[in-house]
Image (cartoon, rainbow, N blue to C red; front, top):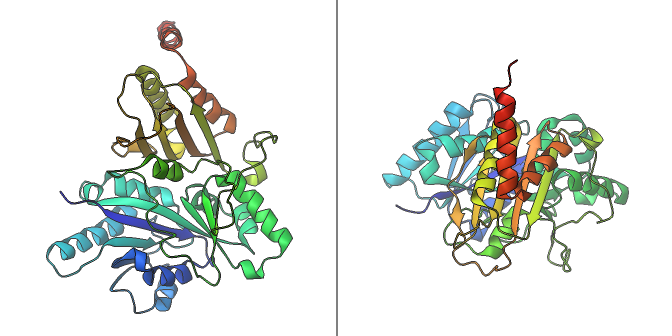
Length: 367
């Protein structure tokens, strides 16, 4: 078995500058040989017309928004690329999928996880979301797809910064803090980016270092060097209260938890089973680094709705404090519900036994 082919999902709302970024990625020496899948919105194929000839293989998918045709076109396209690669007709090291501005990343991730041929051969390397600094705040106000694109991002690329004034930049930064405070942001000057800035973002791979896993988890840790390298990890002030449900009209909510002690296995299973049973359809991404009582190593997990990738152990972990970190990104779920769900991870086995007993007793009562 060879390592899965890394897949970068390049998303962002209409006019955010995805195609300019794509052209830069095709020239990035850190990317190697790239196969590009571009979705054609409608019949014009405007984005495809702008892609430079430097791409060795550009596959234009027709038929509208990528998220609408995902069960068929995307699977067939990626399967075809695999076959051509296996036969020696095409050589590539990674795949970049550029979605239309109206695409929700969720169904795309779902397809990569559940397709029986794609899942063992492709692995998500990261979701990169372009955000227009001039119109981004208004776009997020009006379009839930744009909110999902930001909330699910592993890295956010800020475009058109030269056209944004200070107040506009501050407004979009505040909005991004609410939707996805942990994802690192990088400013693209006319599409220019540091080499390798948008590759190697995924954590579900072997071997994996704890440092890389923590970076992928996008925990909003303070960064004393923020801004010096072009990468920033914004941190909301600690004295601010949690945002109200759907603050600013947002349909996306994010909650996270850190536990300093290892989690009992039965408690973790109960929490995960309960969350997926009650809110699985609303979960955009669920990811974490978890220490289980009695386990030799912590592990990294990642899921979309009801589907989870195989957990990856951190066998080279230098992190000995036993701290578990979990992040939930959900749509149309109150923040309070997400926090209540995460609080279940703080139960002891005795608490769990009592909770299960009360549930059984309630089910046994006559209607």
